[in-house]
Length: 417
Ligand code: EPU
Image (cartoon, rainbow, N blue to C red; front, side):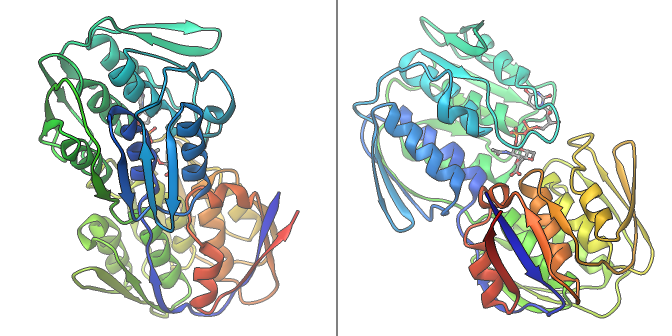
């Protein structure tokens, strides 16, 4: 167990290179199961969740070779092995094994996913999709068992807009007989990334990135090479940290379009934001206006950026209201921020944040983005050292965070708890 130690108060300055997206990587890795020859993924982030997924693919009989940010997965010898326990429990995104194994082998037995459990995260829409495609889904001693003699295309309306369900249905439907239409699909950039990989593997998917996705099933899929999109949540976190420390940072290797919601909100507060082709420069200012933020599905302000944004809102001169319309209670960072002197109260699905200075404290990350929020908060504190326990949560989603922050001039280091 490790903790992050932060002596804040220094404006971040310089440039930071953003890695590939975690939430794409954890879908693209299992998507490779559907291929019958090697899949090469470039721009893979160095994250614990990615390492765990690579181990899972090897447990299934895949051969995995790493070379820097590139991974080659040869799925040809993979077998349909039940995965009730073990590594699948460490990840939320292990649910993608369901769609991928169903598509390749016609069956999957996967333990209920673990990961960041900031609130109950049901998978009923995933199951609804598999059943619509003709699979029989049952509970096998706490694992989800899914079996289909033959997957048949279907029209599936998602009752809630779900990233995971949209991707899982795309994975299975790529190998179904006939056409599938997903209505009310999620539109996140990671969905387009997965569809792009699957199409390069020979799938026939149209409409990814819109609310209607059409998939014409094919008999077989083959290997290909694909480069993962930049991580918009890591990028947004550095944008927010640069603003919070009144710094001047170039956030490089990003797709600025994916960050429009954050850019707009930062500008509304008074942060200077300059968009370039593949980079964004943030120039912090001494005073910020209080604003209201609504976390929504894409292209709205992402729920994953909500927690770091809460920390930035403590740096305004008024009262801000941040409402999360995706998760009703994703507020595990708030008691910890309160320990640091923040004046925040939760009312229903809103956090009401009164601006004011923060102080150093001993705090704990309860999940990945709650951890990111504490890092942003700690970077603003001019005196003392903030100790952030639970660094392993932060490692799930931030590639070389300590190195990157140090390059930007922050005083951050790791210690064993
Ligand atoms: N939902 C259901 N039923 C379902 C699926 C989802 O009710 O079957 C609800 C959820 O409870 C939630 C909403 O629908 O209220 C959206 O959930 P979604 O399925 O979109 O979330 P997810 O696919 O499980 C991904 C990201 C999360 C991110 C959410 C929302 C991955 C691996 N995870 O989760 O990322 O918060 O979309 O954008 O892609 C993170 O990176 O820290 C993280 C938690």
